[in-house]
Structures are given as structure tokens and as C-alpha cells.
Image (cartoon, rainbow, N blue to C red; front, side):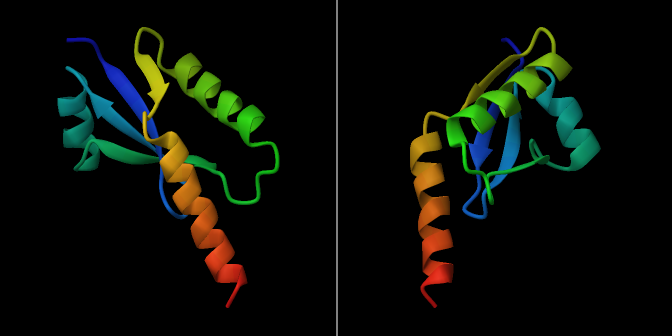
Length: 91
């Protein structure tokens, strides 16, 4: 089984990394979970595609030999984030 990192978008816009594969046990020991926040968020980002490419490239560089991808649900996750942002503005 190969080490993998799957990037997910929280409803707050925070990007989290979900670890799977052999290294997930070590991540679990260190962080008490296999999902850890990254320093990036979509909050306030104007160029979404460019920013997403920048984030995944940075994580790939720091994790050589590990498969890094966005979640298959990234579109739905981003939509949930945008909906929450619009709901806050509408108050």
C-alpha cells in the first residue's frame, strides 16, 4: 500500500490533509488523528484554481514519494464553503 495524502476543504475554507497508507499510523501517533490542518485556507482567495494548484504543489514538494491529490468531493466541499460564506454575509 502506498502512502497517500488527500486534501479536503472544510466548510470554513480550511484545507486539511488526510493521511492514509503505512505513514498514517505515525501521523496518528504524532497528532492523535490522520486528518491535520494545513496552513492554507480558501477564505479570501480570488483565483481559486491558481491557489489550489499552488497548495497541492507545495504539499507535493514537502512529501516526496507520497501520492498527493485533492479529494474526489472537492467541488462539493468548496461549494459548501462558498454557501456558508454567502449565508454569513446575508445575515
